[in-house]
Image (cartoon, rainbow, N blue to C red; front, side):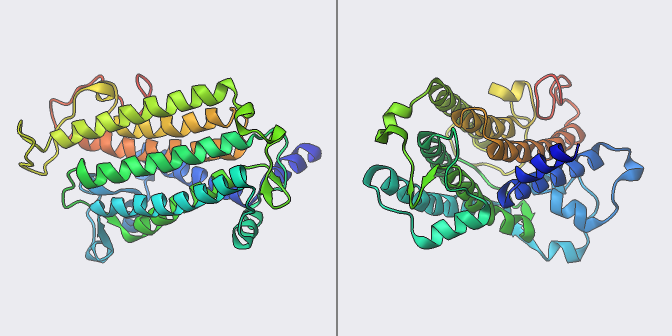
Length: 318
């Protein structure tokens, strides 16, 4: 037993501990929402921190002190601006190291070591890290485009703490990906010195899953946007309507399900075995499940004719 506990502790580093703690926090928040009403925390701040957008309307009455910390939900675009810039820089540093042999800057190597990156990861392929970081950057670029040109934001709000967390989130995601690269002294270690020779079947499967999930999420956001446009594409209102089509036929938050599948696709690209990234996926699962549960509750309480067969997040299950 002592040996197992020691091995479990040795597997934890600052990044894994952080993602594990975030996953556990959102799991606890979800369980509290699923518990009988009498067990729910009555603290208005707690409810305000775990709800955003329209789901704040279906929650407990918000005191004025909570509304003082509101930030427009349309500021979501700021998250992706930060991600495109930051993860673009990280992708540039990684590409320089992989293809030109340029060492990472001293500050970046020190930061990665602080977060728990080891000098050499047995069995980890540099191509996996490169493809996942490209996926994160492409995902952020697409989401920024959608926020600017597709999504129709109402006057819904988020808490300033949620806003700050969102700004930091994609910085952490990029560092998490980069920390998985096998390092050889100052450079990323490439087995055989040819990156293409590292190509494996799971790289192809993971990238196919990524583009498939991304296409579905894009389609879901188009469906949500069209609910507020007329047939000519002109925005006519900012009210909420029942979405139909694509994965919305099965779950209330099809875009959140697609988000989860995007992160799962990156776990596949890592070769299924990357514990750190599976902890990221676990966090995404519980955070998206919590938001989906609130969305589902809102739709059912707002629309009498809401389809009864739909689940909140996972088709036929939850």
